[in-house]
Image (cartoon, rainbow, N blue to C red; front, side, top):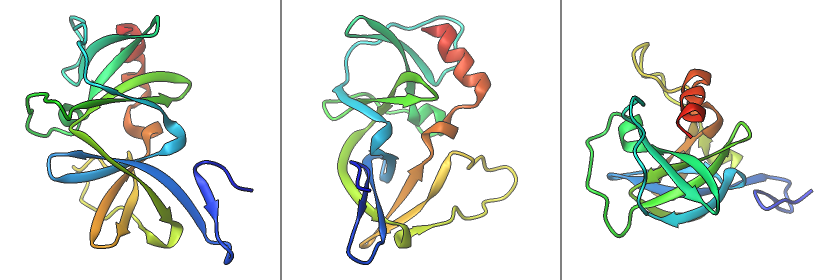
Length: 162
């Protein structure tokens, strides 16, 4: 069976499609079936008393959705938004949220044989949301499990914000 995100070849190798984006010099990927759309960065309405990574909410065709800044979520140095900054609208556990990233790169076809397990980075490193590491040519792409990116408690905060 062939879907938009899973392709097959004559050898039966499973290939998944990932939307890739950058944060700083690193490249990340989200399973394409989780992505609803990509929007240029537009104004976000801040919501008081929310965690720093929740930038606020935005109006998406009449629906108010929460917006998460992945740089802040990943404890990276903040950077001013520019013309390349985009909001990727994704579905997480039946909820629609926006995630702010530096820039969108490409859609990659990644075979199961190209995916490596997440390395053990020690007990203090929170890597539960990393689904694996894909080697594509000379690049290493961090594949995010968007369903695990936010805990149930964080999803509750997002729902409250929206």
